[in-house]
Image (cartoon, rainbow, N blue to C red; front, side, top):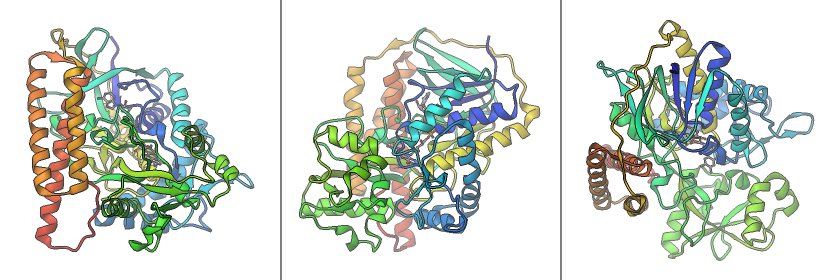
Length: 512
Ligand SMILES: Cc1cc2nc3c(=O)[nH]c(=O)nc-3n(C[C@H](O)[C@H](O)[C@H](O)COP(=O)(O)OP(=O)(O)OC[C@H]3O[C@@H](n4cnc5c(N)ncnc54)[C@H](O)[C@@H]3O)c2cc1C
Protein backbone atom coordinates (compact mmCIF):
# COMPACT_ATOMS: atom_id res chain seq x y z
CA UNK A 1 0.00 0.00 0.00
CA UNK A 2 1.34 3.42 -1.01
CA UNK A 3 1.40 6.01 1.74
CA UNK A 4 1.81 9.74 1.06
CA UNK A 5 2.98 12.85 2.85
CA UNK A 6 1.22 15.24 0.51
CA UNK A 7 -1.65 14.89 -1.95
CA UNK A 8 -1.77 17.51 -4.70
CA UNK A 9 -4.93 17.64 -6.80
CA UNK A 10 -4.26 19.08 -10.27
CA UNK A 11 -1.38 19.01 -12.74
CA UNK A 12 -1.37 22.63 -13.91
CA UNK A 13 1.43 25.04 -13.07
CA UNK A 14 0.36 25.14 -9.40
CA UNK A 15 0.38 21.39 -8.79
CA UNK A 16 3.47 20.61 -10.86
CA UNK A 17 5.66 23.38 -9.46
CA UNK A 18 4.68 22.61 -5.85
CA UNK A 19 5.49 18.92 -6.29
CA UNK A 20 8.94 19.75 -7.72
CA UNK A 21 9.72 22.36 -5.09
CA UNK A 22 8.80 19.95 -2.25
CA UNK A 23 10.96 17.12 -3.58
CA UNK A 24 13.89 19.43 -4.18
CA UNK A 25 13.83 20.63 -0.58
CA UNK A 26 12.95 17.28 1.02
CA UNK A 27 14.31 14.30 -0.95
CA UNK A 28 12.41 11.81 1.24
CA UNK A 29 8.97 13.24 0.74
CA UNK A 30 6.28 11.10 -0.95
CA UNK A 31 3.76 12.99 -3.07
CA UNK A 32 0.59 11.84 -4.83
CA UNK A 33 -0.15 14.11 -7.80
CA UNK A 34 -3.68 13.41 -9.03
CA UNK A 35 -5.38 14.73 -12.12
CA UNK A 36 -8.74 14.01 -13.71
CA UNK A 37 -7.72 13.92 -17.39
CA UNK A 38 -4.36 13.55 -19.09
CA UNK A 39 -1.57 15.36 -17.30
CA UNK A 40 -1.12 18.07 -19.95
CA UNK A 41 -4.74 19.20 -20.15
CA UNK A 42 -5.34 22.23 -17.94
CA UNK A 43 -5.80 25.99 -18.17
CA UNK A 44 -2.03 26.29 -17.88
CA UNK A 45 -1.51 24.42 -21.14
CA UNK A 46 -3.34 27.16 -23.07
CA UNK A 47 -1.66 30.20 -21.51
CA UNK A 48 -0.28 32.26 -24.34
CA UNK A 49 1.01 35.66 -23.20
CA UNK A 50 3.42 34.75 -20.42
CA UNK A 51 4.49 35.57 -16.88
CA UNK A 52 4.82 39.07 -15.47
CA UNK A 53 8.11 39.79 -13.68
CA UNK A 54 10.35 42.83 -13.24
CA UNK A 55 13.74 41.59 -14.43
CA UNK A 56 15.24 44.92 -15.44
CA UNK A 57 15.20 47.42 -12.60
CA UNK A 58 16.65 50.22 -14.76
CA UNK A 59 13.77 50.41 -17.25
CA UNK A 60 11.13 49.04 -14.81
CA UNK A 61 10.54 48.77 -11.06
CA UNK A 62 8.78 46.57 -8.50
CA UNK A 63 6.84 49.65 -7.48
CA UNK A 64 5.41 50.00 -10.98
CA UNK A 65 4.34 46.32 -11.14
CA UNK A 66 2.78 46.65 -7.67
CA UNK A 67 0.90 49.82 -8.68
CA UNK A 68 -0.37 48.23 -11.92
CA UNK A 69 -1.64 45.18 -9.99
CA UNK A 70 -3.38 47.36 -7.40
CA UNK A 71 -4.89 49.61 -10.07
CA UNK A 72 -6.34 46.59 -11.87
CA UNK A 73 -7.65 44.83 -8.75
CA UNK A 74 -8.98 47.91 -6.97
CA UNK A 75 -9.43 47.92 -3.22
CA UNK A 76 -10.09 44.16 -3.16
CA UNK A 77 -6.32 43.47 -3.39
CA UNK A 78 -4.22 42.78 -0.30
CA UNK A 79 -1.25 45.18 -0.69
CA UNK A 80 1.16 43.03 1.38
CA UNK A 81 0.39 39.98 -0.82
CA UNK A 82 0.82 42.06 -3.99
CA UNK A 83 4.22 43.26 -2.81
CA UNK A 84 5.33 39.77 -1.77
CA UNK A 85 4.33 38.22 -5.11
CA UNK A 86 5.87 40.98 -7.26
CA UNK A 87 9.18 40.92 -5.35
CA UNK A 88 9.45 37.13 -5.59
CA UNK A 89 8.69 37.04 -9.33
CA UNK A 90 12.30 37.17 -10.66
CA UNK A 91 13.34 34.23 -8.43
CA UNK A 92 10.48 32.12 -9.84
CA UNK A 93 11.43 32.93 -13.46
CA UNK A 94 15.04 31.83 -12.82
CA UNK A 95 13.80 28.63 -11.17
CA UNK A 96 11.70 27.84 -14.27
CA UNK A 97 14.80 28.42 -16.41
CA UNK A 98 16.72 26.01 -14.16
CA UNK A 99 14.01 23.41 -14.69
CA UNK A 100 14.52 23.84 -18.44
CA UNK A 101 11.90 26.36 -19.61
CA UNK A 102 13.21 28.20 -22.68
CA UNK A 103 11.92 31.76 -22.57
CA UNK A 104 12.36 33.94 -25.65
CA UNK A 105 15.47 36.08 -25.65
CA UNK A 106 16.03 39.60 -26.91
CA UNK A 107 19.30 40.86 -28.29
CA UNK A 108 22.25 40.20 -26.00
CA UNK A 109 20.86 37.18 -24.26
CA UNK A 110 18.55 38.91 -21.81
CA UNK A 111 14.94 37.71 -21.71
CA UNK A 112 12.49 39.38 -24.06
CA UNK A 113 9.76 41.26 -22.17
CA UNK A 114 6.41 42.00 -23.82
CA UNK A 115 3.94 44.76 -23.02
CA UNK A 116 0.38 43.77 -22.07
CA UNK A 117 -2.80 45.66 -21.13
CA UNK A 118 -2.68 47.35 -17.71
CA UNK A 119 1.14 47.15 -17.44
CA UNK A 120 3.10 50.39 -17.45
CA UNK A 121 6.23 48.73 -18.83
CA UNK A 122 7.04 45.67 -20.95
CA UNK A 123 7.63 42.92 -18.35
CA UNK A 124 5.92 39.74 -19.55
CA UNK A 125 8.40 36.95 -20.24
CA UNK A 126 7.15 34.40 -22.70
CA UNK A 127 7.80 31.44 -24.99
CA UNK A 128 6.39 32.83 -28.25
CA UNK A 129 2.61 32.61 -27.80
CA UNK A 130 2.69 29.17 -26.15
CA UNK A 131 4.14 29.94 -22.74
CA UNK A 132 1.79 27.66 -20.82
CA UNK A 133 2.48 24.67 -23.03
CA UNK A 134 6.25 25.13 -22.76
CA UNK A 135 6.04 25.46 -18.97
CA UNK A 136 3.71 22.52 -18.35
CA UNK A 137 5.57 20.22 -20.77
CA UNK A 138 8.92 21.05 -19.15
CA UNK A 139 7.68 20.60 -15.58
CA UNK A 140 5.90 17.37 -16.49
CA UNK A 141 9.11 15.96 -17.88
CA UNK A 142 10.78 16.63 -14.51
CA UNK A 143 7.84 15.18 -12.58
CA UNK A 144 7.76 11.97 -14.63
CA UNK A 145 11.36 11.16 -13.77
CA UNK A 146 11.04 12.07 -10.11
CA UNK A 147 10.75 8.95 -7.95
CA UNK A 148 9.16 10.86 -5.06
CA UNK A 149 6.17 11.95 -7.12
CA UNK A 150 3.50 9.42 -7.99
CA UNK A 151 1.45 10.91 -10.86
CA UNK A 152 -1.98 9.38 -11.46
CA UNK A 153 -4.05 10.62 -14.39
CA UNK A 154 -7.77 10.15 -15.14
CA UNK A 155 -8.57 10.09 -11.45
CA UNK A 156 -11.43 12.35 -10.39
CA UNK A 157 -11.18 13.71 -6.84
CA UNK A 158 -14.70 14.00 -5.49
CA UNK A 159 -14.27 15.31 -1.94
CA UNK A 160 -11.89 16.10 0.88
CA UNK A 161 -11.56 13.30 3.42
CA UNK A 162 -12.04 14.74 6.90
CA UNK A 163 -11.27 13.24 10.30
CA UNK A 164 -13.56 13.52 13.34
CA UNK A 165 -12.14 16.95 14.15
CA UNK A 166 -12.96 18.10 10.57
CA UNK A 167 -9.27 18.31 9.64
CA UNK A 168 -8.26 17.27 6.13
CA UNK A 169 -6.59 13.88 5.94
CA UNK A 170 -6.75 13.16 2.23
CA UNK A 171 -9.26 12.84 -0.57
CA UNK A 172 -12.08 10.75 -1.94
CA UNK A 173 -11.49 9.66 -5.54
CA UNK A 174 -13.44 7.85 -8.20
CA UNK A 175 -11.42 5.01 -9.68
CA UNK A 176 -12.64 4.62 -13.26
CA UNK A 177 -11.01 1.21 -13.64
CA UNK A 178 -12.61 -0.41 -10.60
CA UNK A 179 -15.59 1.98 -10.80
CA UNK A 180 -15.32 2.49 -7.06
CA UNK A 181 -15.11 5.43 -4.74
CA UNK A 182 -11.94 5.13 -2.68
CA UNK A 183 -9.89 7.22 -0.29
CA UNK A 184 -6.24 8.26 -0.37
CA UNK A 185 -4.77 9.72 2.80
CA UNK A 186 -1.86 12.04 3.53
CA UNK A 187 -0.69 14.58 6.10
CA UNK A 188 -1.43 17.51 3.82
CA UNK A 189 -3.84 18.01 0.95
CA UNK A 190 -3.55 20.73 -1.69
CA UNK A 191 -6.30 21.76 -4.09
CA UNK A 192 -4.72 23.04 -7.33
CA UNK A 193 -7.77 22.34 -9.45
CA UNK A 194 -7.89 25.46 -11.64
CA UNK A 195 -10.91 27.53 -12.66
CA UNK A 196 -14.54 27.36 -13.73
CA UNK A 197 -14.86 28.89 -17.22
CA UNK A 198 -16.90 25.88 -18.38
CA UNK A 199 -19.87 27.29 -16.46
CA UNK A 200 -20.34 29.75 -19.35
CA UNK A 201 -21.34 29.48 -23.02
CA UNK A 202 -18.30 31.42 -24.22
CA UNK A 203 -15.09 30.58 -22.44
CA UNK A 204 -11.38 30.34 -23.14
CA UNK A 205 -11.09 27.51 -20.57
CA UNK A 206 -10.75 23.87 -21.66
CA UNK A 207 -13.17 21.09 -20.65
CA UNK A 208 -11.69 20.22 -17.22
CA UNK A 209 -12.43 23.75 -15.90
CA UNK A 210 -15.75 22.76 -14.32
CA UNK A 211 -15.10 24.43 -10.96
CA UNK A 212 -14.65 21.15 -9.02
CA UNK A 213 -12.21 22.63 -6.51
CA UNK A 214 -14.59 25.37 -5.36
CA UNK A 215 -17.40 22.88 -4.80
CA UNK A 216 -15.13 20.34 -3.09
CA UNK A 217 -13.79 23.05 -0.77
CA UNK A 218 -17.29 24.31 0.01
CA UNK A 219 -18.55 20.82 0.92
CA UNK A 220 -15.56 20.39 3.25
CA UNK A 221 -16.45 23.62 5.06
CA UNK A 222 -13.76 25.87 3.55
CA UNK A 223 -14.41 29.59 3.15
CA UNK A 224 -14.62 31.04 -0.35
CA UNK A 225 -14.62 34.68 -1.32
CA UNK A 226 -15.17 37.10 -4.22
CA UNK A 227 -16.56 34.39 -6.51
CA UNK A 228 -18.49 37.09 -8.41
CA UNK A 229 -15.20 38.35 -9.84
CA UNK A 230 -15.17 36.12 -12.91
CA UNK A 231 -12.97 37.86 -15.40
CA UNK A 232 -13.92 38.09 -19.05
CA UNK A 233 -11.14 38.08 -21.62
CA UNK A 234 -11.99 40.70 -24.23
CA UNK A 235 -10.52 39.02 -27.28
CA UNK A 236 -11.64 35.41 -27.76
CA UNK A 237 -12.31 34.41 -31.35
CA UNK A 238 -16.01 34.63 -32.19
CA UNK A 239 -17.55 31.76 -34.17
CA UNK A 240 -21.20 31.01 -34.79
CA UNK A 241 -20.83 27.27 -34.30
CA UNK A 242 -21.27 25.51 -30.94
CA UNK A 243 -17.97 24.77 -29.23
CA UNK A 244 -16.59 23.82 -25.82
CA UNK A 245 -13.83 26.41 -25.80
CA UNK A 246 -13.27 29.68 -27.65
CA UNK A 247 -9.80 30.21 -29.10
CA UNK A 248 -8.00 33.00 -27.24
CA UNK A 249 -6.23 35.78 -29.08
CA UNK A 250 -3.64 36.95 -26.60
CA UNK A 251 -3.56 40.36 -24.98
CA UNK A 252 0.03 40.53 -26.16
CA UNK A 253 -1.26 41.11 -29.68
CA UNK A 254 -2.91 44.33 -28.50
CA UNK A 255 0.32 45.15 -26.67
CA UNK A 256 2.04 44.63 -30.04
CA UNK A 257 -0.24 47.13 -31.74
CA UNK A 258 -3.47 45.38 -32.77
CA UNK A 259 -6.62 47.55 -32.75
CA UNK A 260 -10.13 46.70 -31.55
CA UNK A 261 -12.63 48.08 -34.07
CA UNK A 262 -16.31 47.82 -34.96
CA UNK A 263 -17.78 46.88 -38.32
CA UNK A 264 -17.11 50.36 -39.67
CA UNK A 265 -13.46 50.20 -38.59
CA UNK A 266 -13.87 52.68 -35.69
CA UNK A 267 -11.56 52.25 -32.65
CA UNK A 268 -14.38 52.78 -30.15
CA UNK A 269 -12.49 51.81 -26.96
CA UNK A 270 -11.14 55.35 -26.51
CA UNK A 271 -14.71 56.47 -25.73
CA UNK A 272 -14.38 54.59 -22.40
CA UNK A 273 -10.70 54.88 -21.48
CA UNK A 274 -7.81 56.94 -22.82
CA UNK A 275 -5.62 53.82 -22.83
CA UNK A 276 -7.82 52.34 -25.56
CA UNK A 277 -6.68 48.78 -26.37
CA UNK A 278 -4.20 48.86 -23.47
CA UNK A 279 -6.76 49.41 -20.72
CA UNK A 280 -7.29 46.52 -18.27
CA UNK A 281 -9.43 43.52 -19.25
CA UNK A 282 -12.55 44.53 -17.32
CA UNK A 283 -12.64 47.92 -18.99
CA UNK A 284 -12.02 46.59 -22.50
CA UNK A 285 -14.54 43.73 -22.07
CA UNK A 286 -17.22 46.06 -20.72
CA UNK A 287 -16.70 48.54 -23.53
CA UNK A 288 -16.99 45.75 -26.11
CA UNK A 289 -20.13 44.27 -24.51
CA UNK A 290 -21.70 47.73 -24.31
CA UNK A 291 -20.92 48.35 -27.98
CA UNK A 292 -22.32 44.95 -29.02
CA UNK A 293 -25.56 45.63 -27.12
CA UNK A 294 -25.86 49.17 -28.49
CA UNK A 295 -25.22 48.19 -32.12
CA UNK A 296 -27.21 44.89 -31.98
CA UNK A 297 -24.26 42.97 -33.39
CA UNK A 298 -22.76 39.61 -32.33
CA UNK A 299 -19.12 40.62 -32.11
CA UNK A 300 -16.49 43.29 -32.73
CA UNK A 301 -13.14 42.86 -34.50
CA UNK A 302 -9.41 42.74 -33.98
CA UNK A 303 -7.56 44.63 -36.70
CA UNK A 304 -3.95 43.62 -37.41
CA UNK A 305 -3.92 44.70 -41.05
CA UNK A 306 -1.45 47.53 -40.37
CA UNK A 307 1.08 45.19 -38.68
CA UNK A 308 3.72 43.35 -40.75
CA UNK A 309 2.45 39.77 -41.31
CA UNK A 310 5.93 38.23 -41.27
CA UNK A 311 6.65 39.73 -37.83
CA UNK A 312 3.29 38.56 -36.51
CA UNK A 313 4.16 35.04 -37.62
CA UNK A 314 7.47 35.20 -35.74
CA UNK A 315 6.03 36.57 -32.48
CA UNK A 316 2.64 34.82 -32.50
CA UNK A 317 3.11 31.61 -34.50
CA UNK A 318 0.31 29.58 -32.87
CA UNK A 319 -2.26 32.39 -33.14
CA UNK A 320 -1.43 33.26 -36.76
CA UNK A 321 -1.39 29.58 -37.79
CA UNK A 322 -4.78 29.01 -36.17
CA UNK A 323 -6.33 32.07 -37.83
CA UNK A 324 -4.83 31.25 -41.23
CA UNK A 325 -6.10 27.65 -40.89
CA UNK A 326 -9.59 29.09 -40.37
CA UNK A 327 -9.27 31.08 -43.61
CA UNK A 328 -8.39 34.55 -42.25
CA UNK A 329 -5.86 36.65 -44.19
CA UNK A 330 -4.28 38.86 -41.54
CA UNK A 331 -3.33 41.67 -43.95
CA UNK A 332 -6.87 41.82 -45.37
CA UNK A 333 -9.49 40.49 -42.93
CA UNK A 334 -10.84 41.72 -39.63
CA UNK A 335 -10.87 38.97 -36.93
CA UNK A 336 -14.24 38.62 -35.12
CA UNK A 337 -13.89 38.63 -31.31
CA UNK A 338 -16.15 38.45 -28.26
CA UNK A 339 -15.48 38.76 -24.50
CA UNK A 340 -15.43 35.27 -22.93
CA UNK A 341 -15.28 33.82 -19.40
CA UNK A 342 -11.58 33.50 -18.71
CA UNK A 343 -10.38 33.63 -15.11
CA UNK A 344 -11.88 33.26 -11.64
CA UNK A 345 -10.29 36.05 -9.59
CA UNK A 346 -12.05 34.89 -6.41
CA UNK A 347 -11.84 31.42 -4.90
CA UNK A 348 -10.99 29.43 -1.79
CA UNK A 349 -9.80 31.93 0.80
CA UNK A 350 -6.16 31.34 1.79
CA UNK A 351 -3.60 33.16 3.91
CA UNK A 352 -0.11 34.12 2.81
CA UNK A 353 1.00 30.49 3.28
CA UNK A 354 -1.77 29.12 1.07
CA UNK A 355 -3.64 27.65 4.07
CA UNK A 356 -7.42 27.44 4.02
CA UNK A 357 -9.49 27.56 7.22
CA UNK A 358 -9.49 23.72 7.26
CA UNK A 359 -6.47 22.33 9.08
CA UNK A 360 -4.02 20.62 6.69
CA UNK A 361 -5.88 21.79 3.57
CA UNK A 362 -4.14 24.25 1.23
CA UNK A 363 -5.38 25.82 -2.02
CA UNK A 364 -3.11 26.99 -4.84
CA UNK A 365 -3.36 28.65 -8.25
CA UNK A 366 -6.61 29.73 -9.86
CA UNK A 367 -8.80 27.90 -7.32
CA UNK A 368 -7.35 30.01 -4.50
CA UNK A 369 -8.14 33.58 -3.54
CA UNK A 370 -4.90 34.99 -2.15
CA UNK A 371 -5.63 38.72 -2.33
CA UNK A 372 -3.32 39.32 -5.31
CA UNK A 373 -5.90 39.91 -8.02
CA UNK A 374 -8.69 41.80 -6.25
CA UNK A 375 -11.69 42.33 -8.51
CA UNK A 376 -9.79 41.99 -11.76
CA UNK A 377 -6.57 40.07 -12.41
CA UNK A 378 -3.81 41.95 -14.19
CA UNK A 379 -2.65 40.16 -17.34
CA UNK A 380 0.04 37.50 -16.81
CA UNK A 381 -0.14 37.69 -13.00
CA UNK A 382 -1.83 34.29 -12.71
CA UNK A 383 0.98 31.91 -13.63
CA UNK A 384 3.17 34.10 -11.42
CA UNK A 385 0.80 33.80 -8.45
CA UNK A 386 0.75 30.00 -8.74
CA UNK A 387 4.57 29.82 -8.71
CA UNK A 388 5.05 32.21 -5.79
CA UNK A 389 2.34 30.57 -3.68
CA UNK A 390 3.71 27.10 -4.48
CA UNK A 391 6.91 28.36 -2.86
CA UNK A 392 5.02 29.75 0.14
CA UNK A 393 3.16 26.46 0.64
CA UNK A 394 6.32 24.42 0.19
CA UNK A 395 8.20 26.39 2.85
CA UNK A 396 5.24 26.37 5.21
CA UNK A 397 4.74 22.61 4.96
CA UNK A 398 8.40 21.82 5.38
CA UNK A 399 8.65 24.09 8.40
CA UNK A 400 5.92 21.99 9.96
CA UNK A 401 8.15 19.01 9.25
CA UNK A 402 7.40 17.32 12.53
CA UNK A 403 3.92 16.71 11.09
CA UNK A 404 5.21 15.01 7.93
CA UNK A 405 5.24 11.44 9.05
CA UNK A 406 3.75 8.96 6.68
CA UNK A 407 0.61 7.65 8.26
CA UNK A 408 -0.72 4.20 7.55
CA UNK A 409 -3.83 4.33 5.45
CA UNK A 410 -6.96 2.24 5.61
CA UNK A 411 -8.52 2.55 2.16
CA UNK A 412 -12.25 2.35 2.21
CA UNK A 413 -14.22 1.31 -0.81
CA UNK A 414 -17.90 1.99 -1.05
CA UNK A 415 -20.31 -0.30 -2.83
CA UNK A 416 -19.95 -0.22 -6.57
CA UNK A 417 -22.00 2.74 -7.78
CA UNK A 418 -24.57 2.55 -10.55
CA UNK A 419 -23.44 4.65 -13.51
CA UNK A 420 -25.51 7.65 -14.65
CA UNK A 421 -25.79 8.21 -18.41
CA UNK A 422 -24.24 11.36 -19.98
CA UNK A 423 -27.42 11.91 -22.01
CA UNK A 424 -29.14 12.81 -18.72
CA UNK A 425 -26.38 15.20 -17.67
CA UNK A 426 -25.70 17.05 -20.94
CA UNK A 427 -28.85 19.21 -21.26
CA UNK A 428 -28.49 20.35 -17.65
CA UNK A 429 -24.92 21.50 -18.30
CA UNK A 430 -26.18 23.42 -21.32
CA UNK A 431 -28.83 25.13 -19.22
CA UNK A 432 -26.33 26.07 -16.51
CA UNK A 433 -24.14 27.70 -19.19
CA UNK A 434 -27.16 29.57 -20.58
CA UNK A 435 -28.17 30.90 -17.16
CA UNK A 436 -24.65 31.92 -16.15
CA UNK A 437 -24.06 33.74 -19.44
CA UNK A 438 -27.41 35.50 -19.16
CA UNK A 439 -26.76 36.57 -15.56
CA UNK A 440 -23.26 37.73 -16.50
CA UNK A 441 -24.46 39.97 -19.33
CA UNK A 442 -27.66 41.32 -17.74
CA UNK A 443 -26.50 41.61 -14.08
CA UNK A 444 -30.20 41.98 -13.34
CA UNK A 445 -31.51 40.83 -9.91
CA UNK A 446 -34.56 38.97 -11.22
CA UNK A 447 -32.45 37.04 -13.73
CA UNK A 448 -29.86 36.22 -11.07
CA UNK A 449 -32.58 35.03 -8.66
CA UNK A 450 -34.04 32.77 -11.34
CA UNK A 451 -30.56 31.46 -12.20
CA UNK A 452 -29.88 30.73 -8.52
CA UNK A 453 -33.15 28.80 -8.22
CA UNK A 454 -32.14 26.60 -11.17
CA UNK A 455 -28.67 25.95 -9.68
CA UNK A 456 -30.21 25.01 -6.33
CA UNK A 457 -32.56 22.53 -8.02
CA UNK A 458 -29.77 20.86 -10.01
CA UNK A 459 -27.56 20.74 -6.92
CA UNK A 460 -30.27 19.08 -4.82
CA UNK A 461 -31.21 16.65 -7.57
CA UNK A 462 -27.65 15.55 -8.30
CA UNK A 463 -26.91 15.28 -4.59
CA UNK A 464 -29.83 12.96 -4.00
CA UNK A 465 -28.77 10.81 -6.96
CA UNK A 466 -25.19 10.62 -5.65
CA UNK A 467 -26.50 9.68 -2.20
CA UNK A 468 -28.38 6.81 -3.80
CA UNK A 469 -25.11 5.21 -4.84
CA UNK A 470 -25.32 6.30 -8.46
CA UNK A 471 -22.29 7.90 -10.03
CA UNK A 472 -20.50 9.03 -13.14
CA UNK A 473 -17.69 11.51 -13.67
CA UNK A 474 -20.08 13.74 -15.63
CA UNK A 475 -22.75 13.58 -12.90
CA UNK A 476 -20.18 14.59 -10.27
CA UNK A 477 -18.96 17.44 -12.48
CA UNK A 478 -22.55 18.60 -13.02
CA UNK A 479 -23.04 18.60 -9.24
CA UNK A 480 -19.86 20.68 -8.88
CA UNK A 481 -20.90 23.08 -11.64
CA UNK A 482 -24.27 23.73 -10.02
CA UNK A 483 -22.63 24.18 -6.60
CA UNK A 484 -20.00 26.60 -7.93
CA UNK A 485 -22.55 28.52 -10.00
CA UNK A 486 -24.78 28.92 -6.94
CA UNK A 487 -21.87 30.36 -4.93
CA UNK A 488 -21.00 32.77 -7.75
CA UNK A 489 -24.57 34.04 -8.07
CA UNK A 490 -24.88 34.37 -4.30
CA UNK A 491 -21.68 36.45 -4.15
CA UNK A 492 -22.87 38.59 -7.04
CA UNK A 493 -26.12 39.44 -5.25
CA UNK A 494 -24.23 40.18 -2.02
CA UNK A 495 -21.81 42.41 -3.94
CA UNK A 496 -24.62 44.28 -5.62
CA UNK A 497 -26.57 44.87 -2.42
CA UNK A 498 -23.41 45.98 -0.57
CA UNK A 499 -22.67 48.47 -3.33
CA UNK A 500 -26.22 49.77 -3.19
CA UNK A 501 -26.05 50.12 0.59
CA UNK A 502 -22.70 51.90 0.49
CA UNK A 503 -23.94 53.92 -2.46
CA UNK A 504 -20.38 53.97 -3.74
CA UNK A 505 -19.97 55.16 -7.30
CA UNK A 506 -18.02 52.09 -8.41
CA UNK A 507 -17.71 51.68 -12.16
CA UNK A 508 -20.05 48.97 -13.38
CA UNK A 509 -17.79 46.10 -14.33
CA UNK A 510 -19.21 43.16 -16.16
CA UNK A 511 -17.29 40.54 -14.36
CA UNK A 512 -19.87 38.23 -12.93
C1 LIG B 1 -6.49 30.40 -22.97
C2 LIG B 1 -5.85 30.88 -21.70
C3 LIG B 1 -4.76 31.75 -21.76
C4 LIG B 1 -4.15 32.19 -20.58
N1 LIG B 1 -3.03 32.98 -20.65
C5 LIG B 1 -2.38 33.33 -19.50
C6 LIG B 1 -1.12 34.03 -19.54
O1 LIG B 1 -0.59 34.31 -20.60
N2 LIG B 1 -0.55 34.37 -18.36
C7 LIG B 1 -1.10 34.07 -17.14
O2 LIG B 1 -0.52 34.40 -16.10
N3 LIG B 1 -2.27 33.35 -17.08
C8 LIG B 1 -2.90 32.99 -18.22
N4 LIG B 1 -4.07 32.27 -18.15
C9 LIG B 1 -4.55 31.84 -16.84
C10 LIG B 1 -3.69 30.70 -16.34
O3 LIG B 1 -3.35 29.87 -17.42
C11 LIG B 1 -4.40 29.87 -15.29
O4 LIG B 1 -4.99 30.68 -14.34
C12 LIG B 1 -3.39 28.97 -14.59
O5 LIG B 1 -2.72 28.22 -15.56
C13 LIG B 1 -4.08 28.08 -13.58
O6 LIG B 1 -3.16 27.12 -13.14
P1 LIG B 1 -3.64 26.07 -12.05
O7 LIG B 1 -2.46 25.20 -11.79
O8 LIG B 1 -4.25 26.78 -10.92
O9 LIG B 1 -4.83 25.27 -12.77
P2 LIG B 1 -4.90 24.49 -14.14
O10 LIG B 1 -3.73 24.75 -14.98
O11 LIG B 1 -6.23 24.73 -14.73
O12 LIG B 1 -4.85 22.97 -13.67
C14 LIG B 1 -5.93 22.40 -12.96
C15 LIG B 1 -5.71 20.91 -12.85
O13 LIG B 1 -6.63 20.35 -11.93
C16 LIG B 1 -7.19 19.16 -12.47
N5 LIG B 1 -8.48 18.94 -11.82
C17 LIG B 1 -9.55 19.78 -11.76
N6 LIG B 1 -10.54 19.22 -11.05
C18 LIG B 1 -10.11 17.99 -10.66
C19 LIG B 1 -10.69 16.93 -9.92
N7 LIG B 1 -11.94 17.00 -9.42
N8 LIG B 1 -9.95 15.81 -9.73
C20 LIG B 1 -8.70 15.70 -10.23
N9 LIG B 1 -8.10 16.67 -10.95
C21 LIG B 1 -8.80 17.81 -11.15
C22 LIG B 1 -7.26 19.46 -13.95
O14 LIG B 1 -7.41 18.29 -14.71
C23 LIG B 1 -5.92 20.15 -14.15
O15 LIG B 1 -4.89 19.21 -14.23
C24 LIG B 1 -4.67 31.80 -19.32
C25 LIG B 1 -5.78 30.94 -19.28
C26 LIG B 1 -6.35 30.48 -20.44
C27 LIG B 1 -7.52 29.55 -20.36
